[in-house]
Image (cartoon, rainbow, N blue to C red; front, side, top):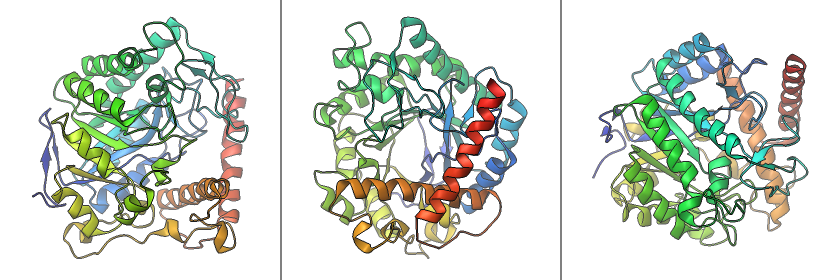
Length: 420
């Protein structure tokens, strides 16, 4: 059985130095021109020097009109190639892989960016009024989006990134096309699963044309949306088989959407068992393993060395995805050598106030609020790492979250002023 420290050769011929993958986390560190910044370069140099074999960036957006959040890097005929080259070089100083994650938010575009996002259908998100009602995409909108993914993949290769990951999970645009809840279309892009998967498969095809056969293309896919009537696990199995035939090199399994936070282990089915063994989506990966031979990564919940190695030993997966622990502990070399037992589970300590308001609250609304504030807390840790500062171990959420949200609003205003 492979060890965490073992390399892995992908179908395209590229080799991952070890079995750890830094899964994507949104950074929000672009400038008001949507360009990469020295802080992004410093952040990824720290992670590169820490020893993780494969680093996946946060969302790089394909359309300047629609962002997942203020501070996303955007590649949309807006320049910034030199900044991308600096980022790519800094993020590979230790000889690791650095893959650019390519994304379009679809309806998950905050009002602070656009009051009318685009989506497959006019089905909005009921989440504290953060998102506007989407406009259904026309054929021209769909073509512009698909071309955007391919364009960004080509720019990633040209500027020195060693691979790309297409984001098809967590309720963003491709995930919306896959979901029968979000996609109510009656044309070739909606209805049957084959039609709903058409957008994704066309994105993969066009990206492969843009980068050639020897450049890694990874995909992040939901094991399921965990929403009644949504993208199901059985449908995920079929899509996994299709994307394998389409020629991707690594499939990362995750799950959930903004409305169903399974991506943070808040699953309603099997949550206790999955969290107890740390790997939220390992059971789903076992099913996907049966229908595809491409390398699989599983992200969600891993904290201990034993759980990571046991997951590899199970044969259900090839790569261990971790994210938030690297915000506090970027150096994984002791873990790879088996000298470190794992990462501190900070998410179990973060809380709004009294213990019953923490992540284990029986009230789903309070759990969701705690999740949102904890996310802001981790954003602050990313900023500290990007600025060469030590992590802040204060586990109170409100003050840290407020500080970050104020900074994000200021950036959004500067961006609006520039584009007006």
